Image (cartoon, rainbow, N blue to C red):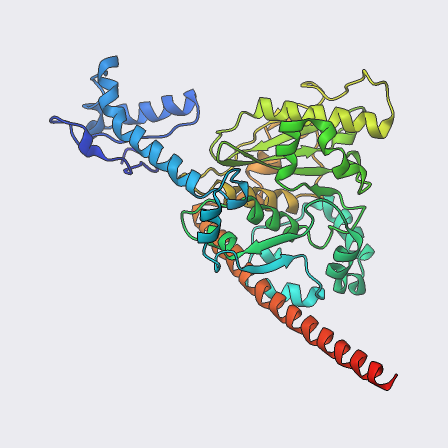
Length: 431
């Protein structure tokens, strides 16, 4: 009736004493304009307006905030308890021994040797995992790019692409060890960890990860952490040793984990800042809670881009072409979460949506409508909390299927080793 889409009833109202106990709700807004809009709607409703005449004194706010403070502390404790065990800096040997062995059980090491058909079978019946999201589409001006990409990748190459990944790519943290405790992060109301985030990024990129001409590049979540803590020089080997030139990429994905929250930073057309064309160079910042400071994070990213520019272009050491003007940061309107635990799933979904748009040219014209056509109203970004809940289940299902394939592969390798050992024993006896 009052046109409020949703309100939160998660706080314990019992802490408020008096006649007005249980007669308030908590509404989250993300801007002054949104707050004013909600306030106007409440004032226009006869059932609610009578509660708006009273303003709290500063001394009274503590009583009303007790429940909110209690809920915040509870949420913080839940987040801390769900941190990946590998990120804990200090542990006693007693605790190590008490860890449940089943939680540490390795489900799979990704990528593993397998033909592409077997991997794709694991995604059958799934949506995003198979790349067959019903809302995905290709704009008319991008069809030629996709067609050229398909022609360049033959069926034989696709069939062996996972093997090629294992053989061709070497480098820090390439192989992901996924354990039972990681899989448990995909249970409802659990926070995703870096292993799950990194796996998803590699999975959606699996058919191009070995292609040096791919227009996108995904860094693992530890990349930004290392950049923030140790500076651009500390992460220079991540690109130098693998001969990655980020300035030839259209989209560069950086998952961000700070203060127990996930967001996604995507660098768009970094090699076009000095071009006179219509291509837009910028940073897209996608945050489902708007909790991270995009200005501070984008500064780290620009410092790294300037370092890479000097390394690859061999320009004047004092030259720093990436700044607020040449590489601005934007946060387009996107779907947001309405709980406190799905930020990691949203990052996975944001990455998937933009990856589907990798053949689209982002231009300066997109600024005119604030990325409404390019992102906000694009079919790839038409999803809601039900889709997020489904994606959480889908990633878990995918990992369970891949784990079964991995077990088959390990058993086959064990049998082959045993057979080789038997043959070698027979040869020795003959000698």
